[in-house]
Length: 566
Image (cartoon, rainbow, N blue to C red; front, side):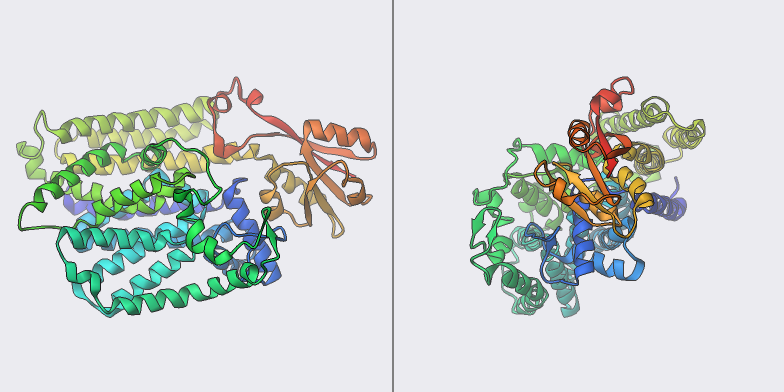
């Protein structure tokens, strides 16, 4: 690839990634966090109670309300759909990708900005943030927006940038919590210490930013006070006198480190580190070398007079270490620092984009670190191509014509790899983007549409909605995670129905019951008038296993659920 063709490639890749994203936001919701947030948003929208958050009529305190507010606005404009729930978060992610471009451009130039943005848009975390929308999708967008604006302010001292940066922090805080303040404060503190800008810690203009953040936090804080602190007699999760304000401003984030929070899944020490390595695929190999190179560079610079930007690497490393101390961890907790990883990788690639350097061997030598990394990286891309061929021809056999775009992509990939006129840097960059687009295309168009059929709750609701009338209602028998069913259902849903309560909830001709096969048989034995509508194979898609992916053992990895009608 010659530099003059870069913009054509860049905008073509953005268009392809946009198509994949559009397909992702139209896929059914996973029966986990995303469906819970969608159901909370639906409930908030229908009750009109925007300052207090509830889940199926019960008090909810785990997450701040911005995602729910934005989804309600989307429901108001577009109606209640899975894609309209996802839309505000995905648009915020797009803002984060644009902010990654502007942030990298500010320090390293236009080309680095575009490369960083495309790296961020073409990693597995971006795919997951579009498909499995959680709080961290919106969090990532606002975090990077605030980082960009504060970086602008630190250079030009314009109050406009400070105000926008503070607004970004405030929006992060009503999206996820105090982590929205911790990330930029940590990153810029590192810069001030590294460059010895001690006066930058004490600018009076920060008071304006604090005021803006406080104004943004006010509605949420009042809602928490009204819902919890005004009612010390209220029992929440077995405890009396729970403070919503204390939970939000301390326990939710810092309590997981101090042990004050009851939330703990006993993660191993390096859980978030190896989670990041797979969520940053297919850029992981390049990033590892880029990070090591950047840390070494900053150490060397510190002893000299010239000190460059340290916000990115300092923010990434320290925030990752901070998150790794939490007693409760999930892979998506690192999503907010993926844009910083993209900037680090883009900066590292820039020197290797030179055609002159590549052709004369000034950039690549036979024993250089980049040369070794480059070969390992391309070997990984070949493995990914082999994996998607295996996916559509063996794991989930699909239309043979899906092999055509993969073969075309692999041919282009080989052309890029073997073309001596393309520099090593452009080979690594364009080849990786092409690989991700191909993998994303197969995941969005083939894999997830097939595998989501095993989310039996959503499948059962489709059937039930066709049969239900205005008097119908649905009973979830025992412990099926029913947020997806509650979101998609056009009729009222009652959860946790058991042997003692089922009889009193039966209405002849208008009651649907959903249960696993063992419990369904108990219901059928007790109530012979109840009839089976359909049986479904069920699997929790967010917890993929080798047994499920293997066609020979897939059935044994699933269990059966039954939709019944009285």
